[in-house]
Image (cartoon, rainbow, N blue to C red; front, side, top):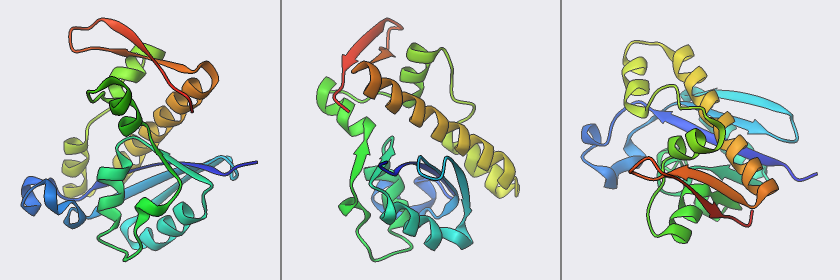
Length: 177
């Protein structure tokens, strides 16, 4: 059985606070969450456990995320010299952007495919971090990992995903995961 690890993280600071999107590695991780198929469950990582998170990603047969190549891995590069982009990774956002020639949000896919929406957004998670509400961040991040897992499994099983375009029309895209 392949160990697929679904992954997401939230940050301590926004792009504006670190001098722009070229400084993602300075944003700092507040909470990271994985779901390991081999383990059959979630793991929540606080910043002090970031090395354990990186080790779990390195041991995965496949890391699946949504914008993890450009964002989540870059945040983690603030903690390690290892180039996480070398890991076997499916960044569903990048794959879909290549197919459609435009970016989709995870929310547009989840809403069209499952009728569910994300529970918050990254800027809300930063505010929660400032307020010391790590449990709220962990719950939000777990939910995003769950949606990421659902989207990947649906795409793998059905060879397609649904999404709402910017005009609210439900469309489909073929995938080969």
